Image 1: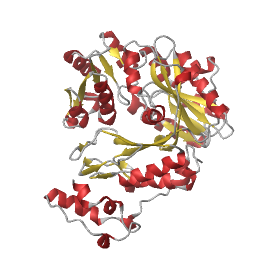
Image 2 (image 1 turned 90 degrees about the vertical axis):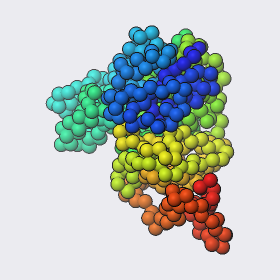
Image 3 (image 1 turned 135 degrees about the vertical axis):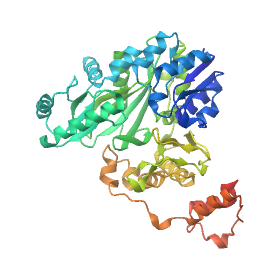
Image 4 (image 1 turned 45 degrees about the vertical axis):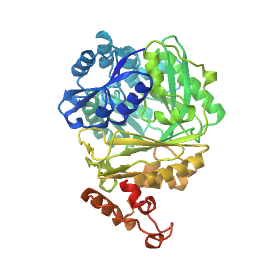
Length: 499
């Protein structure tokens, strides 16, 4: 087992990896940019190395500096987290060439699965169902137009590399194709350094269902059940849950078998996610493999009781999986909401700034993975995710109720967040009924606006008093009204907020 690992990432995922490493008796090294000098992951690690300027190219994307930091500090392995270099096969290969261990899949497997057209070919050869579409990237607009006509509109223009909804456009008719190709290619080039694109048949209103897998070096592959990730905005997941409300026992078994077959066909090692689209007839199609730890991995941990980061590290160290498929069980229901520094009133644009007050929700079945603290300056340079609020309960109805309570009680001031938007989604009848799909937001919340009729001036007062060092007197029940009339701020209580 390793004695020291470097975490080549920032924010909540870096903190999350470091906490498991500490439990395993492994020292950790943080890397950081100028913008992150006082970031939580820097404070959490045993050692920290400055990479360079705030620009990701000078810091979190600089392979030479990260590898040198690992060698200078005596780290034996590097955990990439998610984002940045996490799915970069050049990075994984370089780490191995330097005599270090990459905590993830082999570089060649990552390269094959990272190119979506190559991945589709691998799956087709292994009888894993794929969405009708191209099996090679293409740059010629005329050839793409021919392919689109063969598939039939609507089609989906997709980046061959990367993920996260970047380089993706829905094309409903031929006259939209040229602009969609140009925009998707440009966005893909900027995001992944690769402007290659291809076309798939667009499936209208499918569910996005993924299966978590673990695979060791000895050919053992298990799945840890599914995650429903259909609630998306701009092709990016914002709410995830497990189990999926759409899957029957039989469908779950068939999709899980396909996920395991996909991992074996690719020669996969370590933790990964096999993603599918599920249509309303119950037919499912391979979408892609994410060759890293997923943002939404905590809901799998909450329902299985397994620490995925721990198993990632053990597998990278050469240990076999400590359990078989028959020994993996799941209990209850878990939901995750992603909390971004985004302004819902300004089309969800990033909202950097200083965290004036942060109080995460607490109580049974609640977990809040985050990388922030009161007084931290959220930089503008990186993905605006602040953390993930995760709840567990015995069933889906109870989990929804717990998530509503947790969102209401989570206090974060200084930057804008979409908490009110998330609350409205979780509280909506379609969501509570489990009637969700990838166009759920477009259909039900396209015209959503925050409710400004209940703006709580008391919240601003609490912050101003706190900054001035004034401790307000606790109001009486008569002063603040009944429970129905109280805002979450009032129910929390001024003394508790400032304490």
